[in-house]
Figure 1: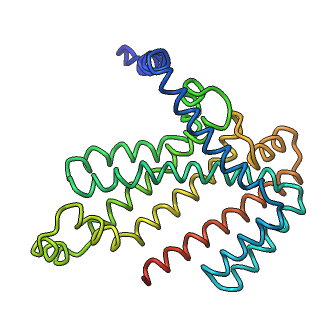
Figure 2: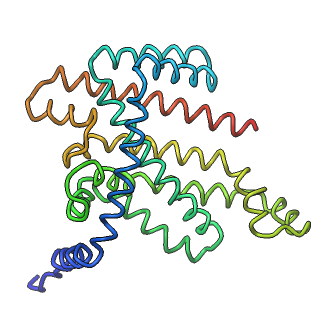
Figure 3: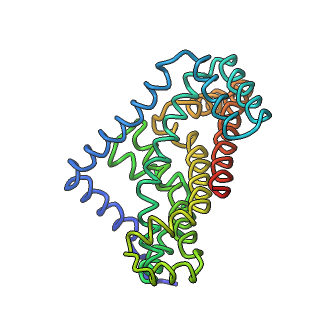
Length: 278
């Protein structure tokens, strides 16, 4: 077919250039805020000796779960420290927690709006489909343009990749609240705000927490990709091992990521179970 090519690439690059020129102060402000959050969490985690942080995580695992979970947490974190990957793991944890925190701050309100309006849901759903199916590497390109190299574009890429589950499951959880309870709240004269915070969100909280759990896991899956644009942490160690063909170092760094992922997953799952019981 001799049809002319649609210049999608030119349109995207023109829009990217326009945004970079006209919204540069906004991007710098976002970069400053995200960098401050990441550095604050990282400094806090490095404020205490590794043994203190290990004991705190073990105590939290014991409180939320059982002794088996606490034992795994202690052994896993001691292994990370023994491998000499403690500092990198704390940097990765800071990146993941920042991405998850911002995803929750942005995702839960959007999910609430989607649950309240079918029109908003119809608009949001294809956008979320696009965000989840677009290859993660593609997000790195505009992130580098707007925020340059470093940890901030890595966090931005992680947020875009990881926020859809929080939005989807917040929407789903609120919509699954029994209609009879909503009608009863209306009959007693509840305002929309009272109905949301005293009925819908408490009942939807287990589903919302499941979305947050998936967001944390997806954020963690982005750490190696984010290391390609300057984000520090265990992902940078994996990336260097790949470029230098050092299988052993890559396996150690990958093991640290797996341990961290299991710990975060089990902790959030225990929070979900306690929320359901409550």
